[in-house]
Every structure is written in C-alpha cells, then in structure tokens.
Image (cartoon, rainbow over all chains, first blue to last red; front, side):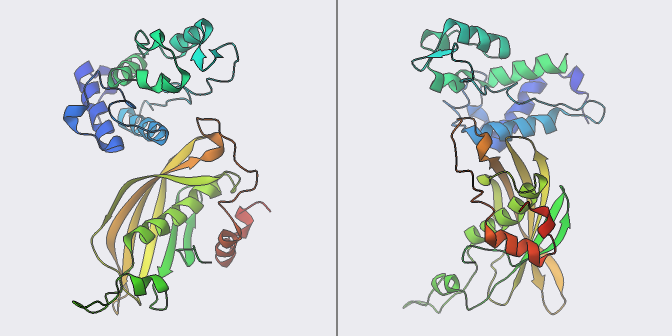
Length: 138
Length: 172
C-alpha cells in the first residue's frame, strides 16, 4: 500500500489517470490536466459517483481512509438558495459560493458566462489532482 | 413475472453479498429467437448476454435495495464492466454472485461473478463478470422528482424475497 501522504503530484496525476481510464473508458493520452470531465471526456452524472468511489478506494490506506463527502468534489444542490441563481445563471453570490465550496476548480473561464447547466464543464482533470493533493496534505 | 431474470435467492449476507440462480429453459421464448434456424444453420438456443446482465442487475439491485429496506428506488445506472467467456444453453443453471463494494446516499457500486453449474459433477464454473453502478434516483443531482410509489421493487420482487424467507427485509 503506498504512503499516500508522501505522494508527488505526478503520482497523484498518474493514479487519477487510471481512475478515469476505468470509470470513463477514456484513453490515457486524452486524460490531460486541461481535459474537462464532461466536455472532453464525456462524463455523465453517474460517472461522478463512480469516480468518487474509485478515488476513495485508490487513495485510502489502512491507517488513513480517504473519504469524500457528498458535494465536496462535484457540485450538488446548487439550486437550494434562490440568491445563487437568476435566469439560469449564477449570480455574484452564487459564484462566491462556488469558489468557497470548490477551491480545486478554476472558474476563471466559466464565470464569463456562468450558466448553471454548464458548471460541470469547469471541472478538469487538474481540478481532481488539486483536490486530492490538498486533501492528502490536510 | 415476465421481467424476472432470476428464479431464486440462495444466499444473503446483509449489506455484503447476495447470490441468486436462474434456470434456463427451452420453453422460454427468447431462446427460440436467439437464434432460430435459417437456411445456413440449425437453431442455436443460447441465453442472451444482455439478459444475464439484467439477471446480475436484479441480484445486485436487491442487495443494494435491502440496505435501506427497499425504501430507495434503485436504478441500474452504469454497466462498468461485463465480460462472458461461455455461452449458456437450455437446461443450464446460472448463478449470479453479487457483492456490495460501496454505497452512499446517491447510489452504490457492486462487483459480480457469473457461474454455470457443471453437470454431472455439480461444480460451479466461472463464466463471466458483471460490475455495476446503481443510482438512488430520488437523490439525483438534477433534482428531478419521481412518483412516491416504489416502482422498482414491485410485487415480483416481493415474491422472490418471500420464496427465500426474506420478506421481513421489505417494509409493507
């Protein structure tokens, strides 16, 4: 069992690649850091659950379980607060909430046209690597 | 019982494992169509692989549903992996052995082994693997609403549970 806390960023990326190859049937060369999970790798909502389960399995050790809470990695319940969304777009308050909840996602492109239905496209392979690196070092 | 692709539950380990068997019969119409004789060959009755995936989905689905006493609507959402190494014909018995890998509020993943009963030695031979993902659809991310009635675990499933002495698992 690897010592996950001592994993380098390259090792994390390589493990994330394996997870995405298995969960999405994607080819290794498609899974670049910039690839969007839904846009480039054609992930659907059930794949998010599959990816969460596989990441937990991959990065857990007998001493230190790797547990991802609901909504921690991928966005959920975004419509629960009417102040976050107006006319199908995130408001400034909504964007603030997203950045706080999901610091692993780079929203700089997305916020130019923050359509609620397209928020998943902002999640890239790099988002997963950043998320895991941050969580392993907590 | 037209869409029941398992006949009997033979092993149940709560929240862990469920095993069911299916007896394949020449009286089943799908074997007549899969495949009928034509000008070039004789009839070739074999159990369709998609129906074996459905059999595993029903086996694993009962296991997943039992965790929350069949209150959740458990829907097959993804066939992660399905491989078969042999063809199954009439008179054979198939065993679906499902184990629960992971479950949370949104759904579950299961791993499954498919076996055939070798006769006359009565030994089980592994002939396939089927790994699945299930969604608890009332917890879907899109927030869609579904009918209150649990249309997944209908009376057919209760019959199967009752035959295995497991009717207490389901809320009435």
